[in-house]
Image 1 (cartoon, rainbow, N blue to C red):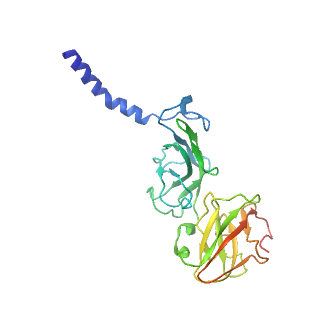
Image 2: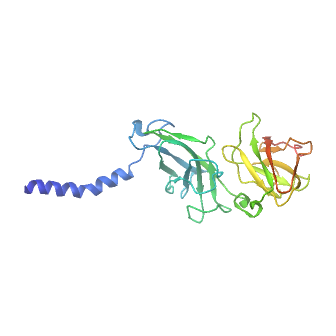
Image 3: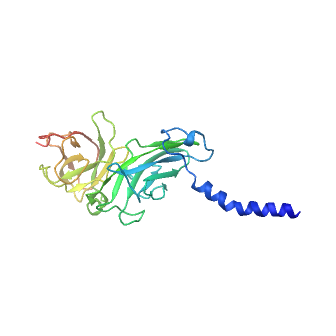
Length: 270
């Protein structure tokens, strides 16, 4: 009886150590995407893992977010989030089976929620959505860029109104383009800052621009808002009218607008 009791006490003492190792143990590094972590299926454990970098160097203090839907343009609270990356930039995010839209962010404030500010880092996985299968970890490595323009998180020019434009931004083949802006100009001079913009598009490429009043507006789309477009940057002008304009009735939305992107080149705005 005494021996049995001593054995039970020894097992209880070992339990915290076993739990510590089981909680810290993660999938082995270098596993190809879509393959079982560590070369084996892990029952009840699956998700994504990888490394976050900035200009190719490991990025510490960044977080990976997983969204079940792109309906919020991946700007609202995420359904799942990883812990902040350490010095090696690696992360692991356990997820239930299904498709997810993956985003990475690093806020210089140290917070893991809230709008991004100038100087913060972000990236969206170009192959969203990522499919997570039972017992497997998918590799998702992301190289983040530093935010230089706060406009796509400002709401001043995007207050909800009953007047505006809805549509889709597509590439040359007609496929939806994520992570770009639709922009509205009050005149045909489209080389200046836009007066109104959408938030960045999600995986479906759709956009909404809210306007303060009806009238004639000129439409374009691009990846950045400020500065002159660079050669090769995704850029497009609305092609539904010769002058790229749309007339919006007061209190209504113009629907079904399509803006097609191509690589920017000199003279495309003329």
